[in-house]
Image (tube, rainbow, N blue to C red; front, side):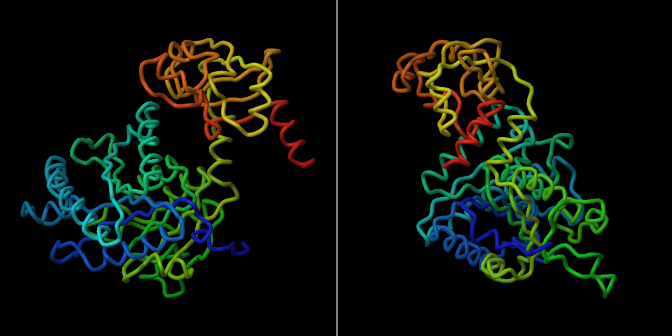
Length: 388
């Protein structure tokens, strides 16, 4: 494929995944503080350019097992959970220490697989991320190993990073690792193996290039990184598998060195709207007035004032069909209120929501990021866009 422009330079929101093998010294089990400080320098530079950054960090179990004196090799589930409980404190403190000199606050978020799949918890996590970005903090995210079981664990933070990138509508996901990209064969065994600079899709040929995990303290390998790439590309997010072993690894990546880029042809917004319009079964219906139909065509959110009625039984975050005064479908979206609360604020101004419900909810009934025009409304907007 023709090499695209560096996705990192154009990204508004970036998720960086840091593996245990980079964060923790394999022989001593100690945190590599100088290396982590160099990563903080890189991220501070991204922030100075106006880019938002979240971190998905492994390392809690690796740090905790050293403190508890647990032996090398695989741990039992209860041992992993105990090590994570202790190590997470050290990990959070380390991130605070390296970002404090830059005046950047950090926040800890612990997730389980269910948090990315159960609708209400997904929306809560997504909302928390959005608020932290807006307030200038860096979310530091890890799997909640202290409560996750063998059946519901992510099992690796590569896929967790991809889930977070999709949840946050990130433009770029960077997997910092102890490998510098995807090779046509295992470079440790095949001297003729070549590194791929750009990948446009996860094909069977690409999948056949994956090997096994290459580190005793990391749970992922190239198969999990390709699984993460599939999730990221489906969400319209570019992804890099990058060499993180040297200091300032993100600065190296900015120069297109030591990495493989996975770059699709959709943006996060386009991918999300495609998923909303075609990938979800509607659980209810919202009828809106003509003014609201025009507002949606103009790219605005659906406000309660423009809604006339709702039907169906649904909870907050459910997919619904939006119909105009003539009963024809104009859009599909994820509604910000359950059935009863939505009925109570129909026709109301957004400023009256708190008085009506007794709590401050979202301003929009369906935010424009959670809404996709369909049918004639979509065609009309495309026509008007072409004309302008």
